[in-house]
Length: 86
Image (cartoon, rainbow, N blue to C red; front, side, top):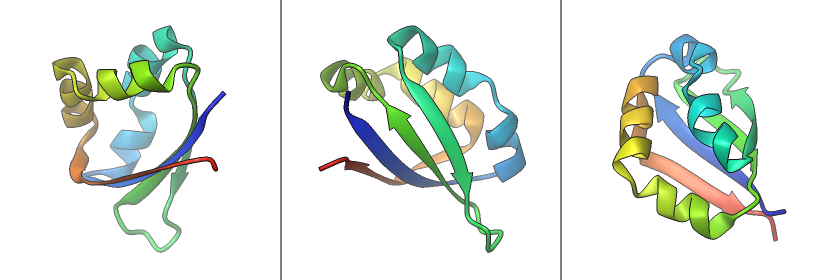
């Protein structure tokens, strides 16, 4: 199962951490995530995501549903960097 490490900035770290949106959108796809925050108190956060179907994930991330979920969570999409386990 592919594992991704994803970093990005958010508007409000506490809101992002408490948001149920990740579970709502990723749960039905079988994706599990662990969340991380920058200890220096910046707005940088990260995820380790276990993704059963990487192609479906990439397709989903281009959807309006994904854009709405990111907006709801205060994600700054232009700051996103994703790395796939090698």
